[in-house]
Image (cartoon, rainbow, N blue to C red):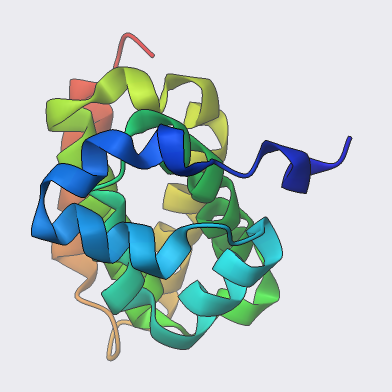
Length: 145
């Protein structure tokens, strides 16, 4: 299946165009393939991760695939910002739009486990206790997933 065929169109973005932050998300991601989005996240995750909070449902779900793919790859091994930004994003989404991530929850928990493993291994680089506490908090909120 060609995932690029599902690239969100301008109509999918209409809701986002009502706010300045949504306009920036649109400018950054509109028309991008999953590979292009993954490359953007690899370069400056902390910038583009914020855009996800302002995306409407269709673009969010589509581009989340790129973020998940990146975090599952070896390229993300030492990208602390990409992981922490993702954790903050998922905390936000679970609080305000949990149904947007239920179909990807298995992949998200896999990434959480990878983050915990990295946090324990590289304690000097990661804030292990807070990361693990945040992940536990999210998992508690999502027991029904």
